[in-house]
Image (cartoon, rainbow, N blue to C red; front, side, top):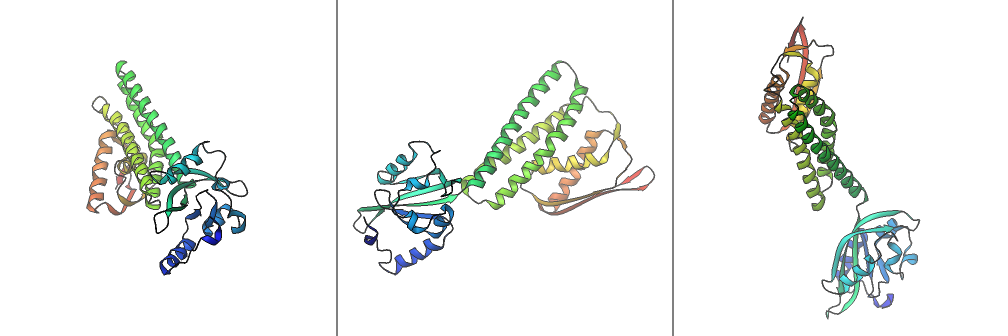
Length: 313
């Protein structure tokens, strides 16, 4: 099939379609049945770095990285020209100057008015950044799951050796050391959920959020395990206790959209209290405030010293 045989403006509807293809940000290609390119929209030419004259007439192989699986191109052509007459998946592309990037590709068989196959079409979208973010989140989830397993094993060992006091210290340390990066990951997941609307990506983000909540619950369970055995008063620093309590609430309820502002005066004296009970009291106060705002709004938390040895919230 020669270029002259392609008549892109047979009627007004085709004209509208052609204008649309010229303006979309996705990369659009049309090839004949031998996979020779006869059309590439401006987005595709810009991404690959070729002029129209350089690209048209070449096969789709020029766009595919040699680092793809060996049989991938043949499989795409076979699926597009035979049943099911379409293909969808990820492909590693390469630009004219050798830069690789990942795209999500959809192909389909093109037929004329008589139903006869006349060519192939492909639409691809650059998902490199999204894929990197997803891989990073999956790596975080793997590490967190590993930490989860280590927590369970550590808990069993300490229970067997009846070192309940050590468990309490360990739980507090884990809540701090794991809770901080966990909160950052949770924020990143929420940010990506708002920015990337792809259905498959949303499923991955939802799965990540579930893992984050699960690990947060495990950390809390470890802390709760020691409460009844360690109910004794001690000097408690309010600043980390308040921040960790807010952090725990956010991790367990990452669908809330509440902006939190804290202003805690430095050098506050410690208070004599049972830390877990005081944390639970603050937990209920903050949750009640969040629910009163219908899970959307702003919460200001301020702690100052009014008089000697007296703290005001």
